[in-house]
Length: 269
Image 1 (spheres, rainbow, N blue to C red):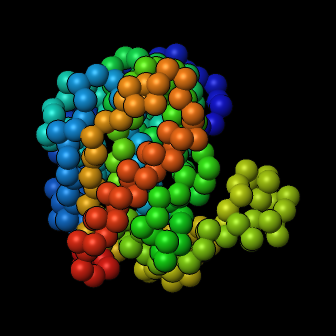
Image 2 (image 1 turned 30 degrees about the horizontal axis):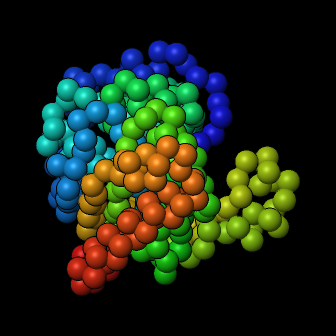
């Protein structure tokens, strides 16, 4: 999670009324276009928890909208579902809108405050590295070695709720993360603060190097919320971070493999 300046009132901007109206519009679309399905929502614990998920879909990922729509449909609007997100969603004319529906800047202070408030906090440890993984590796849990999410859960004293999704990486063909291209671009890539220049192929523009952004194909997207992991109970008072990370990824990979085995055809599901 990036270290950025925190706005003290950011968490208080969540607006359950606006969130409900937005979900009322987006959920029918997501159910029809992506045939969205979220399993295991009963595994969401009553207190604060860190929802750790793989990330899929490139520039237009659908995992957060789908998870949020089904979570609120199942559990109501009494408790916010926050999402740790890139700062670009918190600035500009749409910044307030995203804050009001639960998107908060991805930094340790925000994560800690949201978790201690009793909220559910969604984090994608793999970030851009994960969301642009090649289609040939679409069903591989790979956070790129990032383990900060475990420290966030430990600091706030909350469980980790592993969550997996399948289908998002079928919304277009992801050819490469483009790490080699970012290296060749050198100072240009550093100025853009990126280590990847993803290459994909989709509709309607065909080949894309980040831009122009292709529209997502109507792939069936299924997500599954797994039972919470109590880190201290399972790994002791002074857990080995790498051991916990390996366990979380193992649990997620096993669940993702099961979802993949149930999938008959790409896009169609």
